[in-house]
Amino acid sequence: MAISNAEGESAAKEGGGGRKRKRREEPSLAKWRTQGEQRTYSTKLIEALRRVRRSPPAGATATTHHARSRAVREAADRALAVAARGRTRWSRAILSGRTLKRRIRPGCFRPKPVGSSAAARAAAERGKPVTLEKKARVLGRLVPGCRKLSLPTLLEEVSDYIAALEMQVRTMTAIADVISAASSAPAAEPM
Amino acid sequence: MQCLRTPLSDLSVLERQRTRAEWQQQGQEQSDYHPYDADFCMQNLLPVETSFRALHSCSGGGANENHGNVHGSNDCFSNAWPDIVSSMHCPVVGAAASVEETSVNASSSSSSRKRKSENTRRSKENSGGSDGKDDSNCKRIKEETGGGAAPPEAKRPNKRKEESADASKENDKAPKSDYIHVRARRGQATDSHSLAERVRRERISQRMKYLQDLVPGCSKITGKAGMLDEIINYVQSLQRQVEFLSMKLAAVNPMMDINIDSFFGGREINPTCKSGIIPMIGMSSELLDQSYLQFGSLQHDMFMDSLDLLLRPNVNPPAAVSDTSLGSCLNVNGSSVWNTNLQNVYGVEFQLGRGTALPFQSLQGNLLPNNLKMEM
View 1 (tube, rainbow over the protein chains, first blue to last red):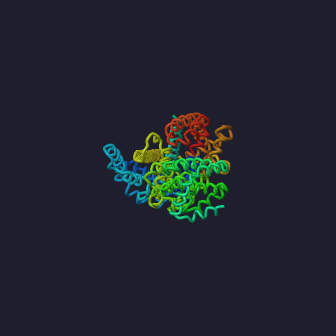
View 2: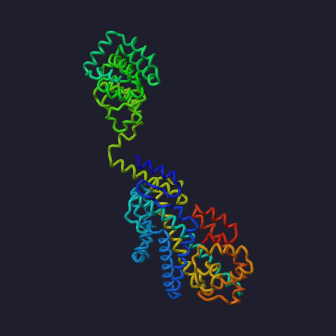
View 3: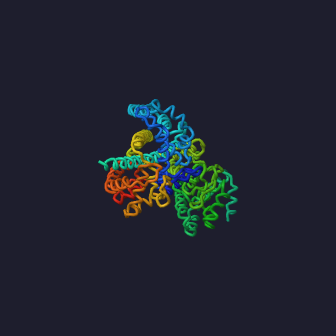
């Protein structure tokens, strides 16, 4: 088939970076690994962190901590979505539907995918009652804004989302490290 | 020259049979054909020769099996489609074709009584020779150029299956397999649904392969279900990590009164003004590199200024006491602390991003500024 051949060739040509399909372009995933991207993202993230730090007053209760961490996380996700430049569905979904996610997510949303995937694996061992479709739905629920997507589109979104998440983890780890190091060092010095 | 065949082409089946009978009676085919073979022994003729010989051998008995051997160049046994056949042959075979055709016609007519066998032969030739010209369901009669046109003996179109004469069935099978190789799509191509499905499946498998590279530990797993499970687990683990890190950041944030932005942008700020203006990080890291590298007095001061900014957000950093302490501690302890921390962190965390894991880790051996640059 001409189409599939073209896809295959182009995929082979472009390798791990971007791919060009006959009908549309797939965003390059290498962008999530560049230092420039990480730098940009960390800038945005730090800005957001500062805003988060300032706006909610400091509290010692657990709920406040929880709220703060949630706020931090959402800020991070939003910054990530901005870094994605809105080309992917999940980034657009994050930017547009943040309030909805907040209501759904805490508590009820998380345990479900974990449980269902475990159940799926167990079921698959038994026989094959769980189809690919169910797993695709689970995956669609994990990625924001990708609930009702067909499998090929979903896979594309997931690959971009995974790359973005990896960058997010890297950046946040580095920032946390710098902060903790900077905070611990001056604290130790005066002693 | 193709018009030579026209009389033959006009021959109906009956006429062909009649000619065959005549030939058989005369028994001249062999003698007649051989010289032709010799003369027109071109590349295309080689198969023709074999075909001729096969024909000759079976001419007497009308054995159809030999026809099976004939393939490729069986030029028109031409009754029904000589025009087309000849037109196909014209460019390739040239004059010989016409002669072949004549002889072939005669021989074929003599040898093969059954049209079916001829059709079979033609189909075989089609399969063997068809270079994909008639790529489609070969209902067309375009013979291929190379081997020799299939003998369009009958007016029947080149249907692979329809010829199946009993005798030629064995012959059919071999060429039919060739057929199928040549036109792999034939069985499926007609259905648009299956085509679309195939495209979709190929797309899915391509992306699954890509995801396999992305997700660590997926190379061993084959099959979409297992892969999807792995992907789900990986996405969940990544999200959990982000959650954990955000908690950590939220916890760390209020404890230290740090203006992170100014820290990163400190290098740039100082030359211009010592306020808490925070520039974009992009430039700052390079300046930081210089400062770290040199640790000169000037840079030291600037560095301490930036540290001051760290400690006192949006405040001009004139204080000397904290400057020295900060500067010293950062210079002495900070680098080592950062190096260790960063190395530890990078070693563990950056396994995630395999693509950049190597550059990150390689840079760890370098100076601190490089590390800082990386993390930014």
